[in-house]
Length: 237
Length: 306
Image (tube, rainbow over all chains, first blue to last red; front, side):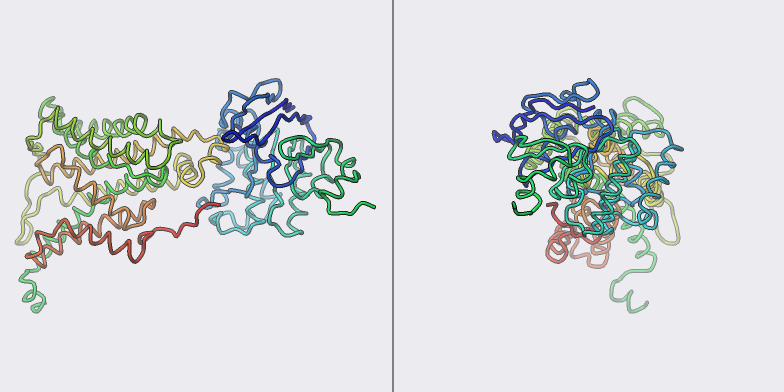
């Protein structure tokens, strides 16, 4: 579905991504783990059209995304749940969901989707009239996920959805990620919480300072000794 | 009441007259201040050309009626449309190319746009003051009780409230308004939602300039001497009004406009000896507000984005 080849992205001369290649197959959950500064967010931002690549290619369903801007990339069915949630604090919860469907014209289907998201996150329905800035961190994350789903994405990219959340909330978020995937949406997940992320992943990549260090199925990486030590906080036996 | 009159040498009728004057001036400030606050809300810049957009609107209306003999009501509609377009053109040519430049560059470009409009007007229309055409009924004086009040003074607050109601409806209850509020908080994520930022900014300039045109037309009827520099002082004061109310906040701009308009008129009414300091009132208010509540009366205490 999404093919990335030899992607190089630089900020003012410093290369954040030094030529990486990644495949995201249709219907899978693909996880990207790595430390701070490894280039994970840069990758998602570049796919979304928020950064320009220096070289390499991003192909989505046989189409080169390189020349497209964010607006056209959303139209193709790709969306981003950004790092730090970045819901619109000055809009109500309901408006945040509606703005996720900004490019859609089908009013009835939008109303159906809002109901479906309320079903997934009942807290959002209870608070639909509140300014989103007044929500708790966990609720804001749910809203950010719900907002992204409102454009009916084929590929949903999530940047550190567990960041700064309580363990119970993290579990809930990961359950939701699984459920979103089960409805046929492809997921590209970037996480520092390697343990949870690898457990849900069909396929996983380890990113280290702009390069792919390792790849495999989520299970393979979970059992890999190096990964255990570096990312899962478990000592080598 | 007698004591009040003795103290102020003012009759109730006289006070009523000043009140009407103050409210109508406040309304005009409010309409113009909204343009400053909307642009700031979205671009985080002060559109210094806004006062000159007011001036241009006065000339559009002037020439529409006197030179082209278009009926005044059609002229007013045309003036609003032309001014909205002028605002959009200024944004496209002076601000958009600097979208990714440092904020100071845009600010300087805004000052440049302001000077350009003033000098262009001076060159084309000449610096000689022109008399804004009299509009049937609106320009005439009405006698109520013991005082004479220009008819337009009664329309100004009504038109202002109407404009404000329409604006608040657009901002709070339409898809475009929702996009405007989203863009004002987070450009990048607004883009990820599929919002075309450039369109939203153009719409913002169009609305702000259209409101300025409505203000300008009423300004022309109320204070008929028009010159290429007529927008400078009201522009400054309305910018201050927006700051006093809390820049970025539409209701705040209206509140600030009324505070300045009413304050200016009433201070001179009560203390005629201070009439020479009339223009200073706005600046004193600015200093006070910056001292005691820099975010303005209705402004939110913003936390810088991390």
